[in-house]
Length: 126
Image (cartoon, rainbow, N blue to C red; front, side, top):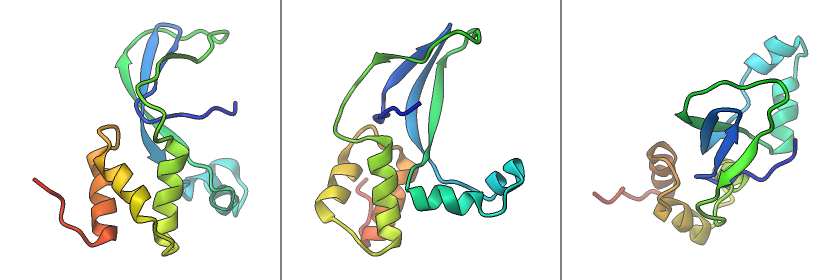
């Protein structure tokens, strides 16, 4: 599955409705779960994150159910863009305009916004 997930997107699969809320950095559990040392590093090198979802509606999912976009709230910030911006900050390759766009978006969770403010050396407005 190769989809572009935008922050705030709502998807339905069977009776379940979920919303894209953030990105998941690859962790060392990938090495353990796959039994392949270095798998985490492979994911990091591909610069492609996992995605966090929030369950908006519980329900049942059957094996044949597809993941279908139900509602798209915005197309300015994808999960991949957030991830790549956060990764770029680790590499000291910052774009102020990109950072400003992210911290001002209502679709970026506070935990990412707080991190971006810290990286930019700014104080979060009240």
